[in-house]
Length: 403
Image (cartoon, rainbow, N blue to C red):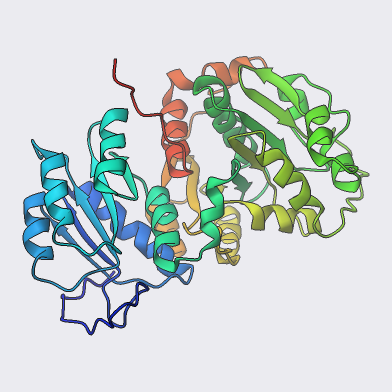
């Protein structure tokens, strides 16, 4: 992303909206990793049509105060307080050199609820984000701030919908979806629903030993006058705060959901669950098109085969909606498998980096029972990747309250 030099801009009197030639984001960060994440996140927004200009610099609060005392007011200011010994004093001083209309985001290294309250209440910052931040955080926070009227703001009302789509059958998409749901609902104690959206050969019923009556397909065809009650009667508990919803395998199934049916069910589900992980095969049916559009974030799983790579290119090309400010996360499964494509060749074909990859582990789930396979996930290499994947998709651990 280009970093334009700061030029004097015409600033009409009382217009609090974005001004002509106004810089969108002026950021001062302390480390290379945070700088790159902000660049990538703003790049994601540009790819979805939310244009922005940014000047991302290395520097502390002192550098930010000095710069902002001299340059035209940007729309958004990002400051890093990680290395500052007296952050509150410096933040209050910063407020004296920026206009009240500026959206201020603060990044730090301390996960503390008292610090968060002080920054929000005393300084008037939009939010305090503690490191490490992710592209998802950048895209989600900045989209509504830049557009000032973005559907992304709706993400704060109800749970977050995350679709996991295998580029083709057998690449491990369902396993990744189930492992992610287990991490969020069981390991992280978040109200989580794994929605198995495959109407033909779903796996959730066998994996978790549950029976779907009524099934997801039944809800789509007739959820009655109260979808919330229908959802409550259909979801099945697994362990801790993890629930599942799906349909029994049925190769003769003829999905006949009407337009808007999937949205109605998802809206009801979001009122009960913090995270909705949708195991979503890419099928040319109405309900799947709706589910793909309703996802706040998309994850595409592929293996290192030519066929999988080809289908991934097509999935990436699928148009995103305003509620998906972040580009899809690419998860490469079975990297290094015999006869598979090299990662560099895959990235060259995709014209972008693979976000996460899992090496070939042929014995990962050998001899494990249904729930045992996921109970063992946090202890192995897949567990570490699933934790990273959860953060990519919008999971944030709660701030530590003061003792």
